Amino acid sequence: MKGFELLNIRDIDHITLTVTDIARSLRFYHEVFDLPILTFDGDRKAVLVGKQKINFQVISEPHEPLAAKPTPGSADLCFIAKDPIDAIEHHLKSYFVDIVEGPVERTGAHGHLTSLYVRDPDNNLIEISNYH
Image (cartoon, rainbow, N blue to C red):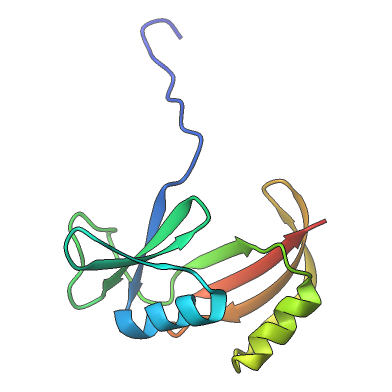
């Protein structure tokens, strides 16, 4: 359209999860998924996931600006892993993480996936997948 510039959005930099206990969430994502912990803006916490990060904010002290209804347990995320799905399943069980569903076949942004589903400490749904 003449007079309008197109946006060139091509990636996601970060998402923010609202949680009840940041230390507990950091421990889970770092220990179970081996994601490095980052500190930014003084004392804020996040984990690095590939080229993106997950920021954490506690429900009792959210960071402005924020979503209309920040709620622990409302997220549904999918992580792509390179390990075979049976190795992922074994790893999760070794950390006593309950598998909600899977392995099951799904469709991701770039094709067919085999996925396992777990919940984090705030009951966010986490899908761990392999492309095939």
